[in-house]
Image 1 (cartoon, rainbow, N blue to C red):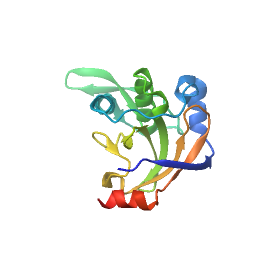
Image 2 (image 1 turned 30 degrees about the horizontal axis):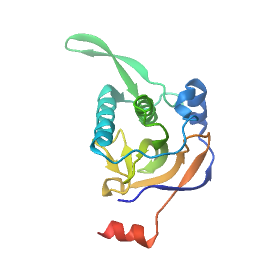
Image 3 (image 1 turned 90 degrees about the vertical axis):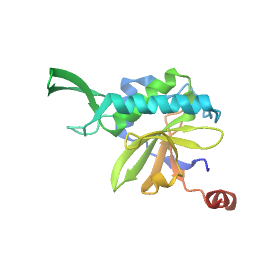
Image 4 (image 1 turned 180 degrees about the horizontal axis):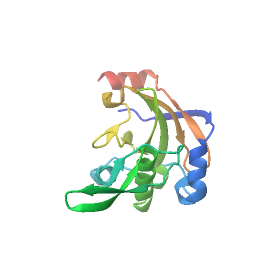
Length: 184
């Protein structure tokens, strides 16, 4: 497994700037970049947050522009009458996972990642551990290392930088050591 690497600065997405103006804690300015231990407790917490958030929100694209981290409520009718459900798109899932994991003290190990999937912009949350970078994605069940074949169709673009308002480009790893790890 290989850890995700970051390079040149990247202009922060406007939707992210709007989100952190509304919810400053999600900017993670008080955290220094760090990593979590790659132990069973960490993996279990990540998995529980991934599964509970994915189950608690119904996917629905933003109707008017892209507003990150603002879950909407929609009334639906079922056999037992009407009820309200939370709806949102990829950025809403990622922001909710970020919020919950910050409460669990994951802090500087978390990053929002911009990527492209099927030529469409997408946002996921990742967690840096001592072993690898794990992805929490609303399109997937479970959590996966970022370099897993599950994500072969993803194009990783940029990541938020904990402890600052900056973003950085994702760098494809090409060292011989990293390539050897992928082969074995």
